[in-house]
Structures are given as structure tokens and as C-alpha cells.
Image 1 (cartoon, rainbow, N blue to C red):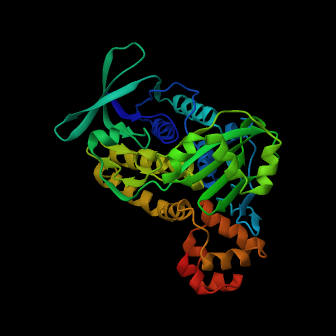
Image 2: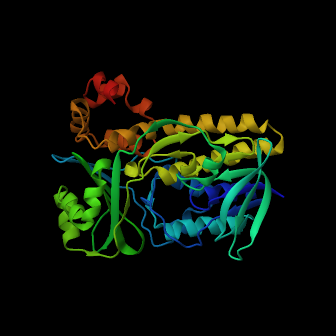
Length: 404
């Protein structure tokens, strides 16, 4: 009998398992994959996510993984580019763009190091109920025999297509259909100081340094273009890079080091992340377009929120259902600005007149540029930036705030 079984051991699952194990709970975390292994990802951990790693004692391991710290952010809108450093998350000023073969292995090892039992290559096939309550998971490990394990709570951290979410029929709300499709690849020999974003009409190009001296480049197209793009991925990708001439020039002289990876399965939704005997975390409970690369940092945040709620419920400090409802409310509150910004960027439309006015004014104000970047990465709440007083200090009208 476990206190918690976590299904899925990547960015939502292993941190949740680790935190609960550190609290003294008996935790089992399972995953159909073995580690290290890769998965589709933007790789990026914003300052808010790195702050989680700092609290967990894992930031040094990420820094030592051959992945450079990133502070500089460039937003190139065509006629000009804003360059700055987003407002830190407390004392944390660095972001990282980490290969998932590195990051997920680090997180799995941290969960095991905290005392959680980790079973790799274990595929969950179903949840078992007693009445309305989930009490067990059933699945197969490498030996092939069916195994049933019981727990006080089963946590789904198994991604946007979560088996746990489907099994409990978790309600979906605040949903938007997929707006983009995306492909990415890696290059060596590209000079780059930080993350770079190039919004263009019906396109977005993103690039950042990652492990081992490589740079990951990601291109986004409208969702409906996916069959067309997939028919000639390399051609469409290189033509997208041409829309960012300065980046294209650097990549043209570089060496591509890996294949293209991509998908059109980029829905935007919230799921109710709790019920009788179960909870959801990470992409299983809340998924959005990766265009602003918020997924990993949000998964870390939600792991902390969920672990605290489960602890409150299992320890008897609070009724478990009420604690999990509080987790959902807090998740939605903190995710709301990033979700709204993500949908805005994912529509792949040029900035409207009000936003163009703001960006032009920011080009001569470094301090405010850094604060604006903070609203993009989650270190500054939009309500603190888009005030009439602050916009007036930048030299733009309050209508910009209303439009934003």
C-alpha cells in the first residue's frame, strides 16, 4: 500500500514524487519509458522554473550538465528588436534550455534519491475503483506479468493524452483548439547569447542555446498548414528561417546535428485536476501551445502546489477534497496570464497598433523592456506592468493596457 502512486516520471511526475517522498510519504512513480530518453519539448526552463530547481537543490546539477545559463532575451519584430534581461524570479536571473534526455533523468534520479520507488518500463493499463474512488493502478512491467498496486491517491502526470485523465473522465474547460504546428532541430556552430523570438505573420521562430554547444531552433506555422509542412519539412523550415535574416545567416553556416521533430497535436485546455482518489499534474491537467515555452516551468510550479495539497489532505490538516480544490484554484490563478499570452502569440498575428506603439516606446527604455519581458516569462504579473501610471511613464496611453 502506497500513499501515492504517480503515473508519469517526467517534468510533472518526478518532482511531485520527489516532494512527497521528502515529506515522508511512501511513493511509487512509474513510467512506460526508461531514462534517459527523449520527448517532444521546447527544452526551456524560465526563471520561475529555475527558482523551483533552486528550492529543490537541483539547480547546480542543471548548471553542470553542459547547458549554459541564459539571461538575454531578444524579441525581434522585424523593423527592430528588443533585447534585455527579464526581471528575475526572486534572486534567480538565469534560465536554461535543457535537453530532455538530461533534465528528465536528473528529475527521476532526484525522486529516487528522495526515497520514492521508481519503476521504469512500466505501462499502466487501467485504474481500479472501489465505488467511485480510485484505489489502484494495474499494469505491466518488463517481466510481462500484470501487477496491481494500491494507493491512497493516484496522480496522473502522463502528459496531454493522459490515460489517468481519460480513465476518470476528467472534465475539460477553458479549451481552445490547436492554433499552431511546430518542428524543431539542432545545430552546432551557431553563436547565440540567449533566447531569441521572431514573431512574423503566420510564423514564429524561436532559438536558444542548449546542451553540448548546440542551438535548438523551432518554427511554428498555423495549425492548418501541418499536412503541407510535413510534406517537405526541411524546405519549409529553412524558408521560415529566412523570415529572420540575421538568424538565418548564422544557421546557414552551421551544421545540423539531428533530425526534425514536430507535431500538430498542440491543444489548449484545462482539466479538472482532482477527484475521488486521483489528481492530475503537468500537461495531464493543463496544456497549452508551446510557443512561449511555459510548459516545464508550469509543471514544476504545479508539482509544488499539488504536493502541498496532497500533504495537507493525507496528513489530516485539511480535508483532501478541499485541499485539492484549492490546488486547482491556485493553479488556474497563477496560470491565467501565461495562458492568455500563449493564445495571443499562437494566433501568429502581427502586433496590433496598440502593441506596436508599446514596443516602439520600449526600444528606448531598457528597464521597462526588462519588466515587459518579465510579463512574458512569468516573473512580472501583467496587472503590475499594464497600469495607467506605468504606461504613462513609458510614454504610451492607457489604451495600450486595455488592448493588452
